[in-house]
Image (cartoon, rainbow over all chains, first blue to last red; front, side, top):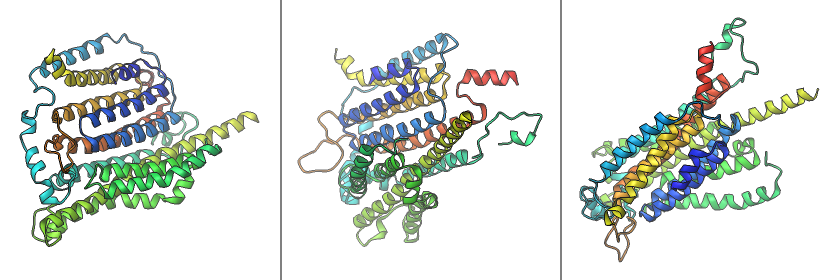
Length: 179
Length: 154
Length: 118
């Protein structure tokens, strides 16, 4: 996975970038299965590797497929990123070790869900029970976000369907500038 | 684009029902195994998108017209929110499904199924709407490129 | 040695996050920026999911013969976050298409040039 990310950073051909993105998503889905998150893994495989790749390819078809070379030397961004990474690594030293059953995040509401989900909702899949029932309000919000994003895409793509062939001369017709 | 490749067409036709059945299996089996509205929605939209990519977007629009998609997008959200309103009218908190059936557990189960259906409808139709949007533009660009090529030949 | 293994998942997460951040900050091409943004997002998914894993546990689906389950709560949060993530990426791509249509480029540097010329 790490190698794929390095590849994405290095590649200038955007087709390669998109394809590596798909590979990355599938690898991520595999990691999620290892982490016991089967529902999430299924979503990531369908969404990350399927939908995003198709959308990115469609946009590549509409625009161009090569990235312009960088004009500036990327030292300042590199420095900022390394600083952030260093701070985060320092922060991880205080986090509980991997796989600990008694870590604080596993002692809060999770045991309640695991013990009571099937009795209270008759749904053996705890993830579904929590998603739709215990945290239904949360999920309603997420669905609304998806709805809003879909509307936004439709508005952005639908306005100005007529494509201008030639770049408009601002002196000639001011109406052309209005999108 | 790739509409003339016979292997793609045949394989796609073979795969489509499998994908759709899998999507509905994931949808309705989501409370017993892994799955649910989000995954099923994306899978079902993926099936239609595959169809649209291989047989052309007009063919996909013939199967599921744009108006249907645009009605389905808010319909899912309304089903979700409406379930909450119904449970509120039955005297419980918003989105507490217990009063939908006699036994609270059954009510919760039924509520989960309804809500997942709402999620499925919204997710699938939003993905389709986005695909139609981008795909329509791509077709337009293709047509223009073809026109430009013809102009160049003259 | 044990501390290194115990914190490895966090370090992978940090690397992915920094890599995504680097793409977003350093590269001028907007599609590449969006890919970087999605890598950034997936690193956050990993950050949420990896602490929820319990060693020796199984996926949180109640079945006979299993007593230890991983924490289901992060799964729920991330499940919705992924789908919302693709919706927002689609919104970003729509903006990219619009920018390309209006200015004829998706490179930030070239956009700056256009602005300073006008």
